[in-house]
Amino acid sequence: MYKSVIIGVGGGRSHGHADAYQYVKRGRVVAVCDLLPGPMDEFGDKFDVSARYTDYREMFEKEKPELVQVSTPPNVRLEILEAAEAAGVPLAIVEKPLAIQGEDYVALRDFVARKPKIKVAINHQLQFHPRRQRLQKLVADGAIGDLRFVEASSGMNLAYQGTHSLQAIGAFNPANPTTVFGQVSGADGLQPNVKEHYAPDQSLAAVEYDNGVQATLRCGENAPRVPRGDAIYQHKRIAVYGMKGYAHWTMWGWETFINGVYESGEHEYPDEDVLGQAAMCEAMFDWLEDDSALHPLNLERALVDFNVILALYASSLNHEVVAIPYEPEADLVPKLRRALA
Image 1 (tube, rainbow, N blue to C red):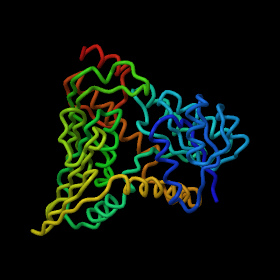
Image 2: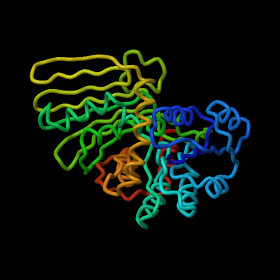
Image 3: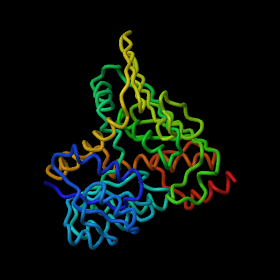
């Protein structure tokens, strides 16, 4: 049985990580770490985890885990990954968003370039939701024909939920982006906040891929709303169009139209999510046991997606189409803050 530890247990996402272990066959949570003892004790009591630390380096040394799950603000994640690698931890799952602006991206890109021993994936667990898996396989098997267009959206901004929708585009269309043309508005999401998640309130991007597919991404108040989506974070969706029809997934339902036949149904997001989170962990253990079993949410692929976001920001600031890969200019977030004030 592999040993897992969780860093940062004050938020709801870490509870989702721990909940999933009732379905993880090859791992168990052996310790948690947080700077605040109160939330950590509450979390430890809830999930029956007795080993609790305020220093993750001490936790790595004493617990010797195979997997660390990181639910901290983005600005401290790289130092945690470096410490985990130094301690011999072989696997890490990092909560999204991967980064916030160009400087974070470059630092993580440099980390990947030196080929670290630790294998890292980003926690876009929707990739592994059972319904998403079935629709992704349907599209991959050619049921809707050659892909032509993808349209994805999220009710929250790029930093909070938009990366989920961007990753979904890649899940259905595993090609490389080549250009981005974007626009943004609203500066409320760029103001100081506890989670240090910064992004414009609304964004719209047109993305071209090297297989000829085009995609649009809408995040924030301009995104369409999903039936049954009571909370703002529940308005994530993606529609994929091919020569023979389309497939459409939302957090609460799905529909397909293939060769003139329409089908649809509902699913329960909480049930899908706990199973998706568990499957994501199992895929990490597959990768640990077999280097060729590359995790689909690996850090290198996530950097490609985040480069799209940076290019979107540059496109909106400079009023031009931006080619991918994009070498980010300095201080993109402060520039957006000033431009949208």
